[in-house]
Length: 537
Image 1: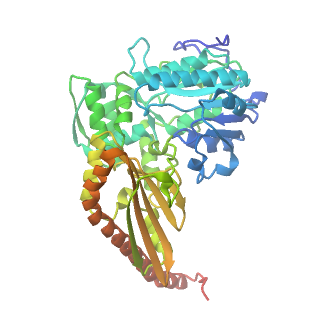
Image 2: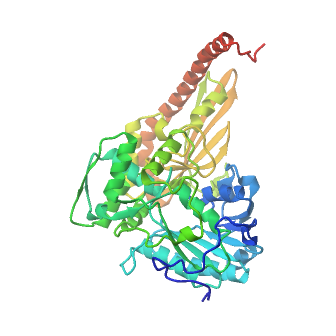
Image 3: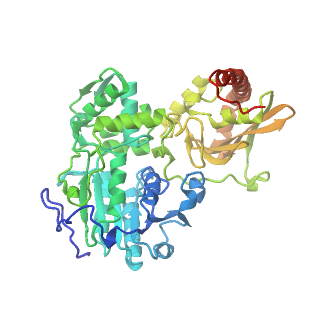
């Protein structure tokens, strides 16, 4: 067990002597070599560029490097292709590392995730010890003392304790509801408040919650890399803005310009029923909604503010809840969402080799459609598919299939997409995930709906005379007899949906081209009228 300064963080004691100044220079504030696990996750994907900005050398461990192929910081980090389950390779990856950020969890991995998380944490802690890592930094959850915690919160507490009891000095931040564009907690609040003007709700909506803006979480995580050596303890972090959960939904509604919601707290906790309801009316799948709801069964409020003795608050102070909501809505409105919960942590399931399909039984639905639009306009429609733009064919049929998928524990159609126009490898588009993108030519989506088999949808644009050829291919690998019967059952609907989808995408591309052609003369006239020189001869 680490003999450093670990304490159970009593409310009034920081546990170790204060620094003379949180901003004074010291050798510990020099550039560090850091390794980030969970770099494809919601927090990890935002932390990496901020660590680079702070001057640190950053390494990331990924099972599927293609998931970060399109991120702006791809060429600025050292990418190690590996999993965290191999102790030897992990120890090699940790050689020369000063600080390890552990930002992985198995919340959506089904039964047994608690044991998996503890075993993984012990493996990582042992590898870090053997590699002489100076510090482990972990983000856990706020929870009351001496309470019967949910499985999810108990697991977070266990992982934090594993690190604090290891031979490596560790900093365990404990945060409540994280509010930011694309966070699961924010999406849960947003969809509940947007959808339900009157909400009969379980008793836990009266629990007191201290939220924290994602920007403030990142501020603390970055600063922790240069904290004084020898620190080994937890820090509660939050906005200091404590609200009941029902008031959080109402504050969101007011910021959104909606009437205040009538939230009727019923005298029952009903976490499982509430988790199912959240899964049906929000993008959050049942595997995540249940632990999220269960984590709200108790108050989640900071018991101490010792972090103030070590890390100065962000410029302008901590972000109040209402301000965090406004910032998240603004990021979504402006298409500046960096990461989302839905894009986190899922490895691609590669399509078996084409055309021989590696011996698989395969069902295909292939469509082509000639368009007068140029390929670049067809591609614009392809890359913008899904989310608010829809699927260009029988919206009701897509919604019904989405609800059926939700009822069986699948992703449904509510996940949307991170950016309204641009896609990157590994990103979510409703119940699909981008498996491959050859920008300007091919988009391959892998289905994450519940089905007895594996499915892909490919959309492509090619030059064809003066216009373009739109190509569309649905691919399904059935699993057993159920998969074959499933394909036969949906085949009649495919005969309606897929042809109209091809026609409508081509028509949308033609309309886009015409609109741009009509807009071009007007722009030239405006430039001439304002004295701006045209760049055309």
